[in-house]
Image (tube, rainbow, N blue to C red):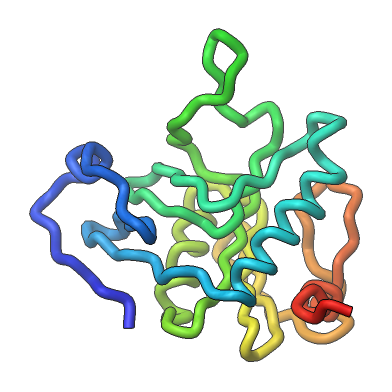
Length: 186
């Protein structure tokens, strides 16, 4: 069960608190600690970042960040993978990447952990959809399915050999089977 701590804080006050391990999110006025990632979650997260960045980083099209705090629309969430189009990545005047991302990702990926409620995680993706995300995924390792969230809060279920929706412009094709195939080392 994910612990929920009732705050008497504003979002600004929450952002001044020290980071927790695992990280905490500020969602609809509540502080919610994310569960500690386990094997399947960690493997999928690492593999998704690697595969996406292999095709997007060199051409400076986009970049996939693991566990990046994104603060927008009154909430501060930490998608398991947050993909930003290159031109939307905040950089400092020095050219270095900024530490704070106060914008929504273009593509958010959440991986359901055994102790997480699907509704809470889907709620994060719907929040992203309300604020301009192009596509979101909710990966359910137990069900071997992926819910995709699109603009207008449209949700579709993908299973088996179904081709997954990818951020437009990324030259990458993935099926649900391929994603869950990463869980088997052969």
